[in-house]
Image (cartoon, rainbow, N blue to C red; front, side, top):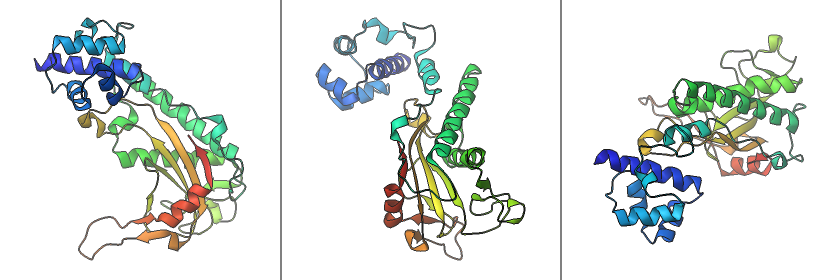
Length: 288
């Protein structure tokens, strides 16, 4: 019984998504409660033949397809596998969503950032599609969330200087900031400087963190993707997408510093406060 309920739930979720319906919309059209639809999709609720017919009519499929062993009638692949395959292709950038009037330092241009973002989309798309051919999860689905965010940031650190000749990647191990003006430090390496741009990748639209309050240019690449925590939450596969890019010259007063006690092992962190977030979002580079 549990297996058939899970199959119905997976199939229902697939066809609902395919029709662009939320759980609330499906429930309203089928004259059922939203929590009932959610429980059916999670395989937690018995569903009558009558309700299967009602739901099938709304999503435009034959009722037996909801009972079929997780097979998409338009493909020989399992439905969940088909969703995974679609999620391997990242969402393209929206060309009209770049702010040509934003303020950028050190000769950096919006087009340099766009090219680096396109390069990352090509990278993650190619990698995830290759992983899918081996029936392996997408990169963002098995790495710890913070590790994947670091990959996004590190990729931008490496890619932006390929297009902006006036910035280079800081060659000092764990040096700050990530990108520094070309040629002003010996061997393009400095342990700490206020000159340059610190780069971060984040799934969050605010509250970005660093180890210390820093007076430096900060650029955040805000993105959306699945995480390694999504499987246990029964979250739908979704493609990687850049949601926004923000940058500003921050001062120490634009951070809230939490520090730590003498006995704590928690990593020291500082977070960009509302004033800092407003500065960065006021100087947005991309809004997806």
